[in-house]
Image 1 (cartoon, rainbow, N blue to C red):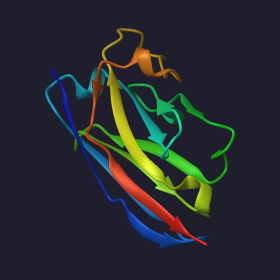
Image 2: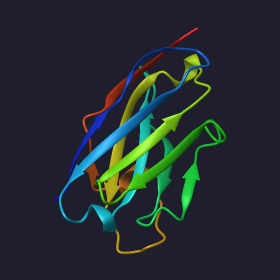
Image 3: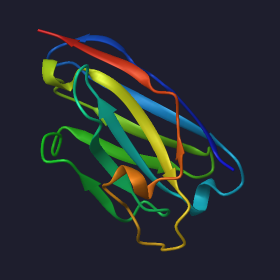
Image 4: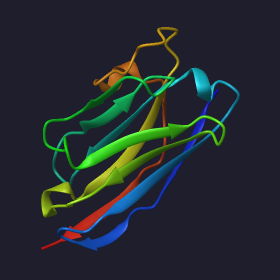
Length: 127
């Protein structure tokens, strides 16, 4: 069992930066692929970024590539999402998720591939 708690959301002006954190409980964190998703009002949840258990394989949505960076610190059981050059269209609730797949290179882009989800943190970017 893995429990996930996101933090770091808030209100920021366009062009600004935020760093989201996702703290995980449970001894299996270092074996879990991790992902970030977001959901804006009236829209479906969408993939943002993912990385495998070692952090060697990262994947990004085209809309955030070059602006967002996903990373993890397995010693701290934490995954991060550094968000730079934020745009109003980045406004959403951001969720982190963990996958219990045994594949060490796994960094899935689809929600059903993840087994555990956090409660979300709101990010609002003003123009």
